[in-house]
Length: 301
Image 1 (cartoon, one colour):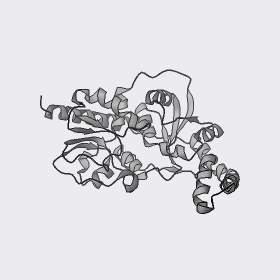
Image 2 (cartoon, one colour):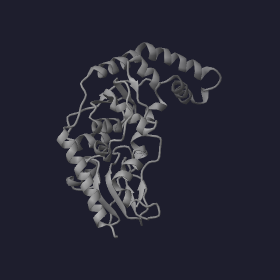
Image 3 (cartoon, helix red, strand yellow):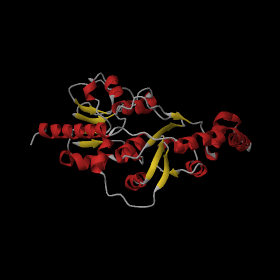
Image 4 (cartoon, helix red, strand yellow):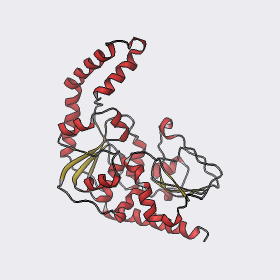
């Protein structure tokens, strides 16, 4: 089978090759026409209708067709072993029993050798798309947070995550991996591209239905303010006007918005983090490994 995942410099996506090589490496074959659909909100994207598609802990990004597409119509070419959570199962018309959890939970059992270092009080991982809008380094520095850049090498990042006392995260896989490493985590939503359907899907899969995303005001970087000013001004965006408009909004933001942002992040730094129950995590990991064995037995040869 060919492993299908979103190939981007993004933490959760970048875990795919390592996890599936460790768990199902004997099933992977780049010359095959069959597809193993991996970790990520991939189910709304285009797949070869003639290929057999084996879905293993994949999710759907409900409510955002522009970024995540629409739920596929399942036919005999789709073989759904497990999806990320009950909301994905419902969106695809699947039984609740197919909702297991996200495959990144397997880090609990496949934990790589992580470099040692000094303890980190509190990490912060923004959504990768938020990095287009926010000055993440500055936000972290102002609030005593350790910036966990989701674009970095995933193994280096996991090493830093394992040293954290707690992680505040806008990235879903920041929470999933922290949970697998048994590092408490706190969810936050600062920018609108954070998909709450995906969060609730995973939270319900781990029996964490009562957890809600904390919200922080949007706090734009200077570069993004210039882009926003140019867009808002339209044909009038000539000469020094965009820069002046960005400078004026930046001053207002520093005076009125940023103190509210910092108050949220400082509060979250002190808030108790969440963890799924040990038994739930172990059960979900065991079920994924069982399904891989079932897939292995079902394959010819």
